[in-house]
Length: 336
Image 1 (cartoon, rainbow, N blue to C red):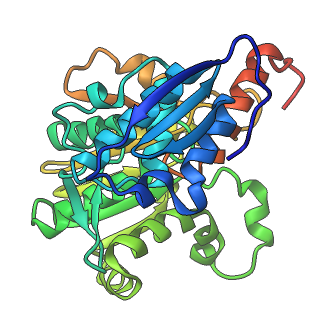
Image 2: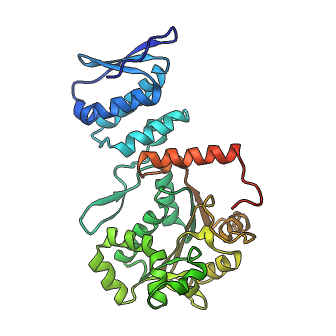
Image 3: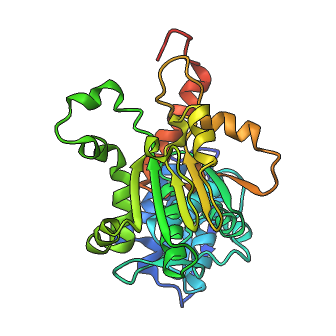
């Protein structure tokens, strides 16, 4: 373990580790879990028999995190990097993982199974609320930063609804705003030109259904992956419709999309209002929609946060660093 220089602020605490706790899983490979806590909190962690001795100025925080980790293992749950990161993030906000997840059954509530038979579950309380909102309401907006599972969960819920015969069709749409006038310079027909901008939706489909099954359903037009412009003039009954990257829609496009909904259909709109790629002077349809529709009780708005990020831990730090920078240095009107 790393040894920090002792100061007058150093304190010592002891965390008992029960004999039934798998130390390999608690400590991590090459003690990675403990070393990460040491690094992040500036404490020393020393193993003595069945105890972990903590030394440093922030031993209370380290104790809380370790006790949460031990509690997870004592319940027979898996302790992976994502869950440890979630515990740590909640701790930084003064929130207990145990209390936050009490009654939520994160490890048992299965959204669906992948083509490999792997169960997909909510990994954070925010994700679970998102899943429950999609189940309960016919139109749901999932708004949050990159890596919170907005699109992936929506696709998984769509596949589950199709498998349960709740809908007859899955439609995934995305604005091709990033393409702009450059579409004309790309090779191929229009579908081939816009496919690169729809790739994240294909990736989620392939992961859940398997590539062959997804392509077969796409050939039968049971699944459509289309640019948002293709939605105009349609009425979609008995469908699960997802609009991804909705922050890049204009208000007119958003209204057009929402009014495509027919009988027996469900709509999920996902987006990150911190990553708007619209040309300067264009308003975001997602921002306007959340203001216009916020009082419509039948429509759900789920706001995912940094703590719900389930990608690499560095993604959370990148998002947090950018948020802090822009709060301290707001962009000027003439900046992109």
